[in-house]
Image (cartoon, rainbow, N blue to C red; front, side, top):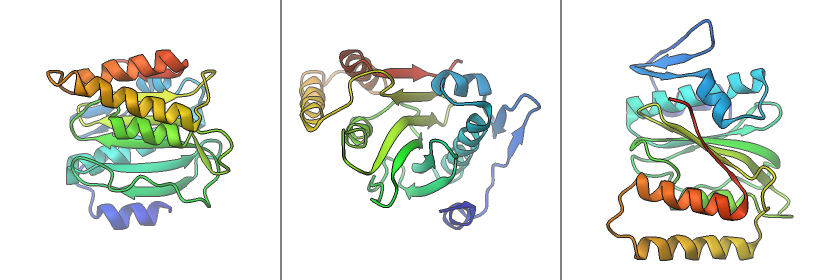
Length: 209
């Protein structure tokens, strides 16, 4: 899907973006800085960062206008917009990347509650990072909070997941939350994300304030 599909789904944009000379983008009262994007996408070049920034801008516009989640799937190397996945105020309805999309991708989505990655985000990331699946492989999964918070997770030089890893992560998350009912997002998810990324050698990053 290209820009037409985005405009068709979003409708009239009531929060136009202002781009500064240094590349920072402001939507409403929120600013997406290039320094934050460099922090969460350290292996992207300047042109790729601009593409990622534009995706973050779109998602912030959607979030501020419709109070809904949405995901944008980008080609890791060309920056082409491959897919838009709509959602509602609390989640992406059905996170599926079709089989016709192959190779490395970047998945950017927004969080109206400003939290880091949810359990379903981490499990989706694991599924689309499995070995030898012959389909899209997530290089970066990132989230844009409506308060300006940005996060990313990537495999980097860490352990590439298997189905056994997926089961391990699923059970770890279930066990953690079954014994941590007092913990509230985003703190609880931040703790489990840090634990999982340390365990498997993955990269878990937050943009600079």
